[in-house]
Length: 211
Ligand SMILES: [Zn+2]
Image (cartoon, rainbow, N blue to C red; front, side, top):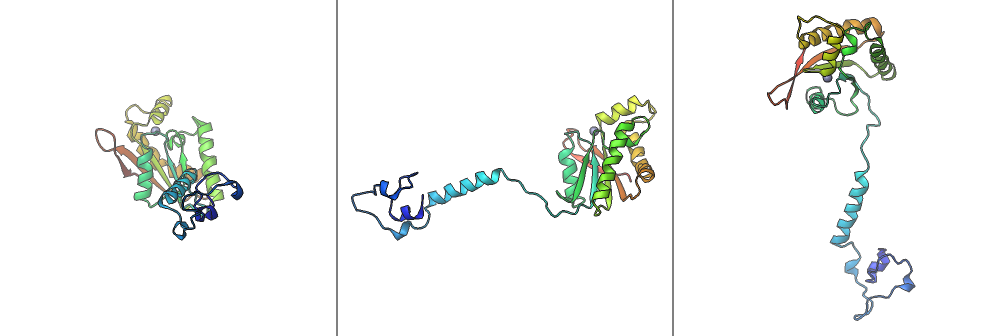
C-alpha cells in the first residue's frame, strides 16, 4: 500500500488509481498522522517478505585467500566431523581452504602406477590449485577409518594381507609427501591425519596426527 493511501485511511489493496477508490465513510476521510508509520502487522509482513527473499540468497567469500588444500574422502558419515575439525582445530572456515573431496581420500597416491587415471586427476587438481592460488601454504590430508573405497583399492592391488587397513592408511599418509615432491614443483607443507570413529555408535570422530 502506498504511503499516501495509508494517510487517507484507504485500505483497499491493489488499486493504483486514487479516483477509483472510495474512502471509508462514516467519519469522513480520516487524515490520521498516527498511521503514517507502518503498523505492527505491516512491519511483520515486510520482514517476512525480506526473509523469503533472503532465503534464496547465500553468502560468498569474494575476497578469500585460501591458505590450505584439504583432502578427504566423500564418505557421508565423516563430512560433518571433517568440517568441524577444520574449523575448530585449524581455524579454517569457508573460503580459507580449497576442499578436495575424493573417493578414498589420498588413495590415488599409494600406487599411482596401478591406477594412473586417478593419480593423474589427483595430481592435476593439486597442481591447478597450487598454480592458481599463491596463498596456499599447506596441504591437510585425511584418511579415515572403515573407508570402503580405500579397502576396495587395497584388495584390488593385492597389498599385504598382513597389514590392517588403517596400517596401510598410516603408511600411505607418510609416503604422500615424498610422492608429491617428485610430481609437483612447489610443494607446501603437508599434515596428515587419520580420522577414527571415537565411540561405539560411530557418531564422533577423533583426528590422530600421523604426519
Ligand atoms: Zn572413505
